[in-house]
Length: 415
Image: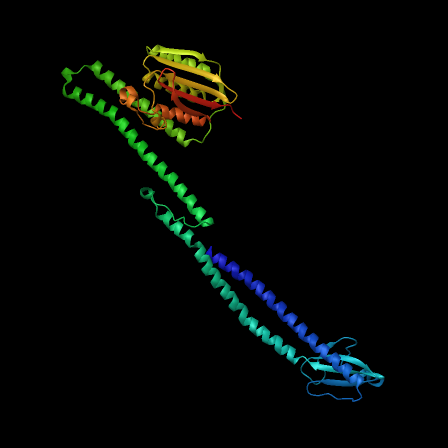
């Protein structure tokens, strides 16, 4: 870019200087020639009004003419001037004439001074124009280099940043376009660093979660191998199956979150009766638990989106409420002018305000869900938050009337 800008500046300035030089030489020649013409007119008028018929000198040609010498004129300027090379001379003269009695007097002045002046100016311009072009090129090169130095520094810094050095940032002290570019680059690096740290944390947490069922299966298998006479096949099979199901559920959740991260925003635009989904989730809780499940506040509510994902969202909310409830889980669903509002509440210990923002992070367990057996892997609410965002909605946590947690999901109507 520096070379291209310098060449462009030199080219533009060179064309302007060459054009200006040609115009200057032409104008200078015309002005000096016009001055010689005026001098010739004045001299001819002076001779025509005088009584002395002067003759030619080394710097001036004079011819007195009448009707008898009309054919031998050295020039025919008429009322203006004419530049010709008279016989016997090797240079042009500017001739002018004036009436004198029965004839006229013709006066010629040489153009040698005009030619010398224009020749001198041309020589100066031949040297000056390239010199000016060189000066412009040098100044442009230096100025462009100073302007592009921050960009070069940014490029070098970004080129040296690796995955292990995402904490590094480019200099952004300037307040111009380059400074704004550096600020944008730093924001991008911030996002990359957060994404990289999130991936590392995700891999670490997933590995930790998968290690537990694998270790359990291995432990029981080693015991059964070492003491086959003390091992009950049914107990071993039950343990392995339980841990396998637990591991399968964890892997399914991880795959769901990974696909949600990779896929673009948006979801299928099909009508979904959310009240039917809520009633189905409530019925599953009645069958699987001894809790009291209330659905009296569930009214009709239709949204547009992915029915499978919405069912997974409601199911995770229901499972989360059942896991923390003492005896009661309440569902409510209502429609408003803006969309549909779903609330799932329990009468458990609730969620402290300080923890409400992080319960939607992956692998987060609060004190009330500290064990894997009772608290799950900490992915349920993370999946809920992802599905809600895909449908353009929001999720908030409040305190239920029964003292537990109340999770409120708002899904807007499509525009």
